[in-house]
Image (cartoon, rainbow, N blue to C red; front, side, top):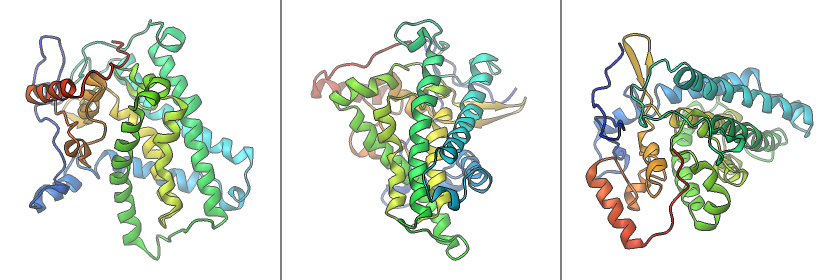
Amino acid sequence: MAEADLTGRSVRGEWQPESLPKPSPLFTKPLKLRPIFNFFFAHDGLLYPKNAIYAGLAVVAWLWFTPSFARTETFAIGWIAELYLRNAALLIIVAGGLHLRLYMKRAQGQRFKYNPRWLTGSNRAFMFGNQTRDNVFWTLASGCTIWTLYEAVTLWFYANEFIFSVSWARHPVYCVLMMVFILLFRQAHFYWTHRLTHWKPLYKYAHYLHHKNVNIGPWSGLSMHPIEHVLYLSGVVVHWIIPSHPLHAIFHLLHAGISPAAGHAGFYKFELGEKHAMNNGGYFHYLHHRYFDCNYGNEGVPLDKWFGSFHDGSPEAHKAMRARKRKLGNRGAPVTID
């Protein structure tokens, strides 16, 4: 088999990785070059393999599945609908493919699965009484639509030269660094918009919908209220201000759209054949769905560490979280559906 599920499970059947999440080395003092190099370039680092795959998909989308500027210069239902179909197809391939393999075929059983339970198929708290159908609806009806609208407006801006476009041929180093910047910017942006949606009024009217998914699956990633989609996908506005290429904006939105499927897959590793497994990560965010008041961002930009909401899954971190919640007072609990 692929790499063994070495850690075993707790009494409740929950699985956690041997190597617990830790903040990236980018902001530690003194700076250490080897950990920083590994953070970017080691296998399962920031750049490879998952984000390299997303970047490749963005290149394909830009070259062959994006309307020309001659068309996007004027708003029209036709080319906007093409964008929606392209984005929906990406979601179906990525989220649907993971769901098919991991939850319908159960191809690797519960190996590396955080929560021992499978997704609920009958629960009135979800639309249609079914978690997966609820998640698919909000992903395609709201998430994909708002993703497409942000992209359409951005392409219209580029086509009409309302925002600056940078040439890859003339500025290749800048353009490559911009791709890396997007990955780090997305983590910081996600932290702040996510914290905002935990503000009581926004949680009550919007973010509660995403937190119905305590036991997460691939379609849970982009299953949000439209208000949250507007906030979550708003990071692309940075390209309206900072000079970049349309490919950068497409990559930014594509990454925001499809990477949550892997991040919410509920599995630490994806088994690839008999002898190999790809590290998926996602444990840090899984803990947020499980405990609610921690891990609002990602490890790469350690805002959770700086603001005291970091939880690595250890008993010590759990004790610190409980102490923090007692100090702050009970602010209410999320909807919990297992």
